[in-house]
Amino acid sequence: MRMKRTAIAASAIAALMLTAACGGGSGSGAGDDKNEFQEGGAAGAGKDPSATGPKAVPDDAADGGIVSVTTAVAPSTLDPTRTYYVDSGEIMSGLVTRSLTQYVYDEKAKDSVLVPDLATDLGQVSDDGLTWTFTLKDGIKYEDGTPVTAEDVAYGIKRSFAIETLPDGPTYQLTFFQDGDKYKGPFADTEAELKKLDGYEPGWYGGDDYKGVETDGNKVIIHLAQPFAELDYYASFPVFSPIPKAKDKDPLAYENHPMATGPYKFKSYKPGTSLELEKNDQWDADTDPGRIQKVDGFSFKFSQDTAKLENTIAADTGDAQTTLTYDNVTPQTFKKVQTENEDNLILGPSPCTYMIYMDQNKIKDKKIREAIGWAYPYKAVWKARGWIDGVTVEGGAAILPPGTAGRQDYEYPKGQDGQTTDPEKAKALLKEAGAEGFELTWYYSKDDEQRVAAKDQEVKAYEAAGFKVKPLPATSDTIRDLTSDPKAPINLRSGGWCSDWPSGGSWFPAQWDGSLANKAGMPNPANFDQADADAKQAEILKMDPADVPAAWGEFDKWMQETYYPAVVWGYSGSAFIKGSKLGGVFDDPVKGMPTLNTTYVTK
Image (cartoon, rainbow, N blue to C red; front, side):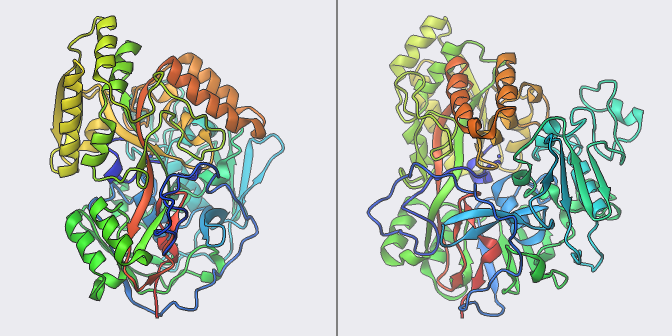
């Protein structure tokens, strides 16, 4: 899954135990001597298919109150189909929409566990692994009191194939679902409309009659092109939430008020500025093992000044006592809160890797790509971005973050540990390639002081290594669309990826599949298109599940050593702050976000 927009320019939760300071949750070890990323563990791997509602409410939870959430960034979208960044995912899955499955935080295990949500279990799989059946619970309603139907869930899934109309959402269905490469969603239902789509091929079809999803009463039946053993994890995404077709007359406007099935519904929404949620009186706690509904509502303020929001929450007076942020705190605030009120500091895993994706169409010589890896100013960028070494960021060369099952800890280029800058090695490689003065160009957010500061460090380091540079200004509102255009006039894309579930299968097919290269709205930022890599991935997907983790670890190392399509410039950890009157706030190791679904005001 993609990262919070604060951590990404153009690219996407699960595995791993990237732990800052030993654990997550209120007062979860902020004062411990250990303040580093832990190796080991696969957060989010646990399952409880028999979990039922209601979820127990803590004794210290008060009735009512408003939880304020402030952040320096803004969700790129709140459309369930397009929700793929972890911030929008936490808001929608935690509070507003319900999917076939969901994650719930286990305080004792300090881990998130996959449990049923709309479905009665985690799905039933046919012997050949090609058919999954999810049976919906009885009595689930939308905010207007109308019943949720299997047809609504099926429509929501079909909607996710319309990637030109609704881009940037998760795309596993295109690879694994039957006719995923041919079905183009419910909106393009005529030959003339299909021919207008990018890359049109005969055999494409659209409309409501999709072969990959059918319904039978209260059952949603999904047909696959190849086995997809991790579909139950994927089914926790908002893309598997019900959408009534009658409410989707204008698909681009649906995000302004998606129909709620969770404990809260939209009261008002101003994209990029604010979101007000109020109680959904049609939500039934007895059907929901993962969410509670104690507060009256949530008030989100987006695009806020970082210093102001941190100072307000750290002061912990008045309304600040019921306020939190999901932004990682700056080093100064971290030290202040750790010293003065460590119970308000939430530390824990964040399963994400930051990368510089090098466009394979434009930087074809591997020696040039290796030179970029040596030229990159890792620690200078961390400092410019306000990250805390060993708490909110750590270096490494592997694409899979620490803690991922099967991960191999290697260095590439040889001797590069993901934090060493060596301009002389970069110069030597450029000379070998006959590419001295090679020009690097990328977009940066000119309205983000930290991004500008990071850009300045990159320019300085690249020039010192013998490159020419041409950073292109964009804004926080435009950089995502500009960068995700495969034909953009750039050859570097700064971004990253978070695990979608505890497996390398949520990393490589999702962003290193050659069929996704050079296509608008598709998550292959490096335009990586190599037949041997595609063949290796296809082989891994057919392996015995017990052998898969190690195979993905081997693939990670092989891909970097063979092609080196990405410079890994850090793994993330979480360090949030909250007010003293908020309870139920933990770090969700699957998303690296606060657990909004269990947040309440204390008595």
